[in-house]
Amino acid sequence: MLLEFTKMHGLGNDFMVIDLVSQRAFLDETIIRRLADRHFGIGFDQLLIVEPPDLPNVDFKYRIFNADGSEVEQCGNGVRCFARFVYDRQLTKKTKLKVQTMAGIVEPELGANGWVRVNMGMPKFEPAEIPFVAEDDAEGLYDLVLADDEKLSIQVVNMGNPHAVTIVPDILQAPVAKYGAQIESHERFPQRVNAGFMQIIDETHARLRVFERGVGETLACGTGACAAAVAGMRLGLLSSRVEVELAGGKLFIEWREGEPVWMTGPTATIYEGRLDLRYFQA
Image 1 (tube, rainbow, N blue to C red):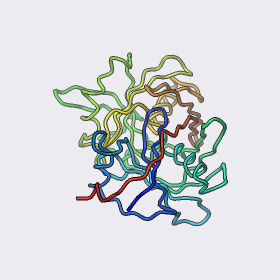
Image 2: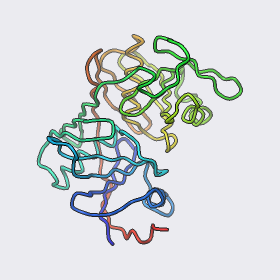
Image 3: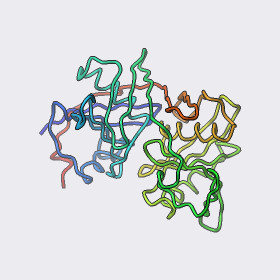
């Protein structure tokens, strides 16, 4: 069976996108892991799948799978690519969409030059909503003890998926490789977590690196940028509109207390192709 796909990226966070509205296929964890392999497969951070919605008054259903085959709730860079994909593939003529995800409804708006603005919904901070095992009421800041009794001060934010954000003095020296995997799989995060390391340049500008759950460090993370910006805003260190600089490029995040988070950034299509799924089955 030949399956059409598109390879896309948002700031270097790369995706394989598959239309399962006009095509039919079954992709299990083994197949997804083989497709994700950068040497023997297509290679990607996440697989994005377009499906018909289950809910009324919604345009599409959006499913996200990490390179390890695990399904996750949300992907900010992915939803921008998703919106561009369904429009370019003529699955819709709308430039404002309502998209169903595991985390709820998101609303991307297509702009010029491949840029997409997305209503990412309301951030959540309560430990049970992350989920995060909080031993006490720390008013948003928690100490996380890692191996060798290393201690980090983190904020926890759910942007449709869980994030732990720590502020560092220098993003280039941030211990992402050393601490990222430890934070991701820490026992206080029962569903694992994305680990963000943020350097604040000034009130309108921050730099960020993210160790993504089930993937590792990526060139960009949209929900991670939202979570980090919101964390800085809550501490009074960032203004309500901030430029977040990642290794792959820049995102613009807007948020005010009691309102949803808005993310704006670019998308890019790399190539389109067809593959025979038989070569990726066990």
